[in-house]
Image (cartoon, rainbow, N blue to C red):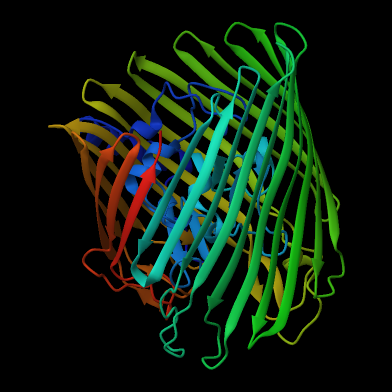
Length: 607
């Protein structure tokens, strides 16, 4: 290995931030998704108005404005997130946040961890957009608060909210490739009780996902339901329930071109949460939850594998206002993973116990967050992680932030316990992947809008790599990057722009990590003309490599989307969306096609 000539992580981050400052001060504004006044809960695992970690909030209004109808594509339009897909709608999709691996992002649904204990990732392609009220994206390590998976960051999805007063809503969509979708829901309640129920059914004939296979259409169908109920028993005691279930039926192309492959999937999340205010400064919170990832694959109509994983959580937390502007969180998580499969895993369950503590504070121009967590897992032992973040207001509208954090990713059941086969065998001696990250940033606002710039450096050790016939902790990675986020209003147009530049390298070979683009940018512009609204989005992604040796190169691409809506009656609107208007042909995974030009028509009722 050649000697390193790179600067230290802190110097690298400082150099990137100083360069960003020069650029940002010549820019008029920054993304409203980083609004300092927005109340968020994901970044600090407690309510805060001043999130120091780089974050983005996607609201229901943003989703309806952008008119994107699948979760992977929606997430890829925001800072620091790249996406790959094995074909069109509903096909296996992965995201890469800040250059980390596709299973280095922790997904939460209404506070419930959502992932597969066998594959390690979340089936994001199966999550219905119609069920989403809000998404909070936190970029950077968060294991000091949440435990495993959060090396690249955390994405929390909040399902449709309940409100007082009975209000129905719904929409119907039809489009290219015989795409169809219908959503119906209702929200209601009174001063003490509120509820929401939403159902959706969507389908598409799809495209020929893999160019080498038979020229068939690989279709996809999804039906889902979500529900929320909350009740305030007394002024000090409240209880909430949440439930989501999404069933998918997916046709896909595998390795052999003559075989027909289908999969039946179920994603299910349910939880009970309660909060009791013990005193004026002390609140006690309890959460009981379960998430399930179920799938059965069929080859030529014969079952070829069943994988059902279940994650259960009991969490207790104490929020204590120890002084004005100082909030301490002290809690304990007990987690249990269980696998039921047609494969005979040598171990089928594991427990994890984790106490944690965090302290967020605001003193005049200073803000900080400190957290520490100890995970004790019966499968791979103990792991300590933590986060330290600080912010200082240089002016009333300009904040300098710095952060450092450690994180880890637990080995999956497949990697640890897969039964011996001709091509793979589990390795019960694996250790978690471990990371350390540093970051610097500026967040500001003025009469033009808002802006931010963040730089970061991440080192990941003991990367899990397949080496025939098993998985080993053999690799190390180094990632440096910088992100820009700008939002403003120009001559009546709402303008949002974000860009990400990163260098994800294998430290042993100096090669770029596979499937990561090093340059990404997104531009969204929208304007209202009375009852009419129009907009456009432009996504640009640089080239990427699909192998560790960087010999398989996939070209970059640019996508143009156009949208138009008209409110033809009170609470009624009609929308038309054209995606990939220029009909760009591109691939994010070799031999797997991406969607061509598509058009979608929608009629919506939303009081």
